[in-house]
Image (cartoon, rainbow, N blue to C red; front, side, top):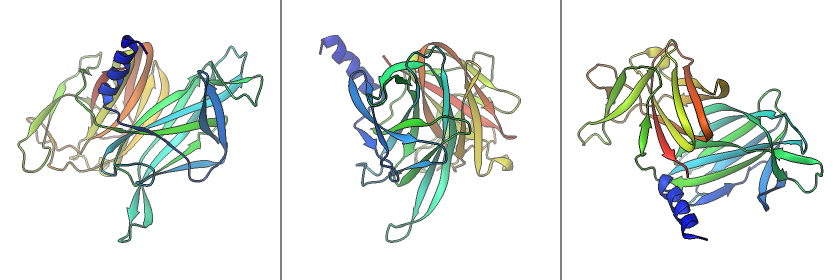
Length: 316
């Protein structure tokens, strides 16, 4: 390894402070597939119509129950090796909290996040040596931030999708302040969110929040490759957003995903600065921006108000 390669590798680790990566196996499937990617065999799991893959995230397969984890979902579809067209495929992802009894047995699953992931991918060099004449598409990547463990992730195909191969990787992370925060390309009023880390501390102020409502989509111009993290809060003064909220993300005009989040109370009553608007605790997700210049548009599907903030991380 050259010094330049080592420097790039260290930059990636400093970027998100990723500690360890762990492959997560589904609890309900042994239908694994070996896909050769860049000369190395990688283990994926096959998902077909009518099936659901279930992944249990607990202290049995991850080390630190109180840490934040980035869940990376990698998916590919089979495609003819000489194909000149892209393959469209997609999955539904649902994340459940475990409700435990006094003996730490699971007594209930509580849905906290769900989303639809759609991809339009070209053929790649990835192959299954047992299936000559066929390759796999380029990978669809998804990053999901999880607070702690004791969760179940369920993944199924969207209607009309071909079968896919899936790989889940959990990475313990310690987020650091991003190098920069993005602003919409259109003129929008910027808001400050006042919040406390704990009830004993003084209020702090977070800038670069923008209003996302049904009449005001937000669009960002982003040059990849890089990772972005979008953070959202809702206006708690509006009673129609008391349990869940969602918004759509489009990449270059193409639907990518619907994000659905549970509304959580802020630990110390966060609010929009210089107003009486109380906002929820934040929810966030990661997204992997591919190489080149892309336009990302967020659409609010609710009657209420969402406040959105985008952070970016170089991925070089």
